[in-house]
Length: 575
Image (cartoon, rainbow, N blue to C red; front, side, top):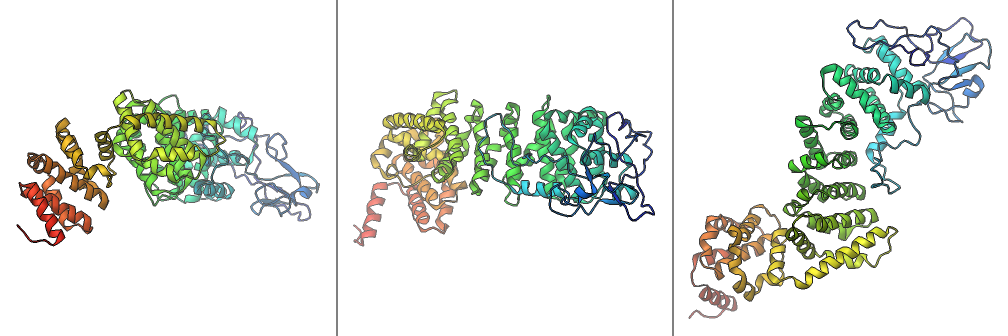
């Protein structure tokens, strides 16, 4: 690509003259290199009319003005930047001089702290993440590209490209990116592949991320280059960076992939989509990820696309979000993760799967402890979706019962007394309160038990030791191929909560007591072995309840056994 055709003029290479009295400051531009004949792109050329004082590009300052410019920022009050070259061949002491400025950085750009979500996520101010702090540090860094050029690590074309993007004004830079985008994409990426040192790669990836944030359509340049290179899509160019050792490079590449995947006319599919979604899953639940907030931003973008939502859910994505939600206390990350769940609930088929992951209980726990309105708002909106969006009324009823068991009604009553600036929160709170109260009035003891059991959060509520309940409802445990019994046995396998284990093994014993044929059912489902394994549990109550359940498996006369245990506890003699 000819730079002159792009409307950009490059300064020529200058040398120190013999005159030491008068100096001019300019950026050094090495000599032009010969492009590779095999390159499918027109190389960067040199305009024969270059002039370092051309006021059509960049910023020009007199030497007097330059003395008041701070290093690398163009601000008043500090010495000139140390990386500028002194040229002593100017006769006029007031002649304009060029300062290399980081013109590609928008002062108000917050690409690393915000993703505009079409009015959904607009609450300000945003929390500053570690990723944002690191990105700002990278933008302020100064890379000596001429060293890489002289070492032949990069070519003259690479140097010219990065020089223009760094040193010239926004108008010239935009013209270059908009009219020669594929060429720039190729050159920038080739530099990241040629340079092994992390800092230049961080710098270039941050530059690319900011360019995409400025204009979504610039992603087409990477698709064009990828298509010309090997027939792939632009996001494929950044997948290798996900395997780098540098965490910032990994996360910056993930951000770029998210933008290209969500802002392109074609969707990511197949193995590429699966690899990327698995990467996000692993990163979002990794406690070692210092840039988890940035990963959550990527996921926020991804789950807003219907096809990506389905693929993410099929990879057990809901479980990954809930796992991360249990780990974090940072309100911003909580908000981002719950935002992802909220997006998922707009799909009725996905909303139907929330009950399998105890999602409502997790949301209820976060809601009860939330101190931030934005977190409260997104949880309330998610819960409302779980009542409104399911296709089947029975599923919505099941969600409501779980909310009641999770004591969300108590939390809602407390929230209704607070003052919120957003009226939508109060409307959603009132809707949930009305719906749950209407269901709570008509709920049966058995429905309460089923809701509690399916939630997995068993506790010593009155129903577990209510003898009339067991006599009247024990045969219902055989419905749906012994579904409730299977859940009890499953809890003995997977739960680590002593209370849950104690209640579950107690209920298995009650089932066998009031339904004697149930002993064979429990044994066939593996409940006998699990109950016996509880005999060595560290918790004394779990051991006690397991002992009673095992005795009920072995003894037929439950009433006789019960009276004997009572007498032994009272210290009375045997009959």
